[in-house]
Image (cartoon, rainbow, N blue to C red; front, side):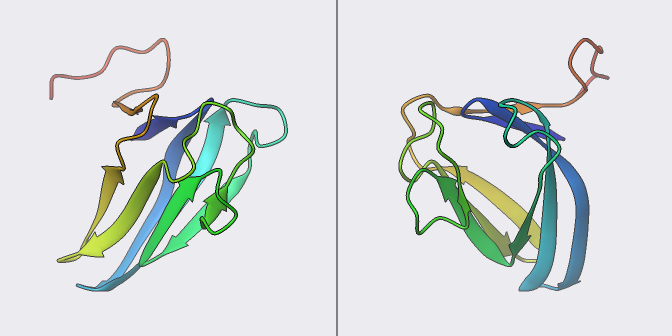
Length: 103
């Protein structure tokens, strides 16, 4: 799965679930601004993305809200929650230019 957040697309690179409340989510930037292309971001159990320096993933991106979205671990699954960001967040089921299978 790929999430489009701000000017960048983050592709799930790896998910490691230890138990219902512990896990690691690793995203790789597959499309976006040059300074973050190919960069890998790691979320342990919970985290946030936005322009605020207190966010675990802090990016200087005018298309991100200060607190754009949160990631959290619930019942052995990672939950992504858009925090009413100005520009929203988008989920892609397939790579750009590829047709997604029925979902």
